Length: 227
Image (cartoon, rainbow, N blue to C red; front, side, top):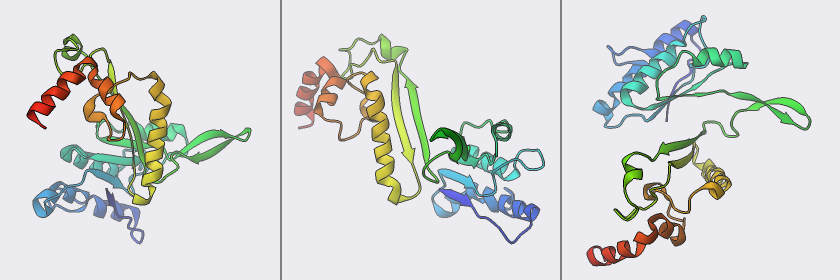
């Protein structure tokens, strides 16, 4: 994860100019576009410490620069809406159109002990949670279940649950959250899954359900060609 620095000793205008930099001089945020050529690596996640909230009733200039760079690199950019209320957050959201931009509203109103309180939107700072639904249709559904090894041809969607953070110490809690999510929706799932999305601890029964009646044939072929 790449985060833009906070230049606390500088005025807001100077700070924005220095952090944003320019593509021509390969400085500031724009320098990230040239990271691969200079260092052999490039960022996959970009966040801006001063990208929260609109500036002078217009799109945040740092957020605009980060969005441009993330679009060029096809990297995810993460922004804090900075909105003290939903109106301000939605106004901030209206400035973004890139599919690589993830916006996080820092605070939410929730019911607690019979009253409404404001709490952080996520229990861990720097955590991203998502549930992706990938459509399974068209040619996939038109194939007969015994045409190829995978036979879950009546599935309509494949789901991927994601929860990631930048602090390794959070890993056990992040994994548990993901498992609890999966457990909650699993009663509504088909018995099998898409093999590329399966984890290594889902068990042989789920693997067999994934290939269905094709499993014995697949096992025979594996013993023959990949013993």
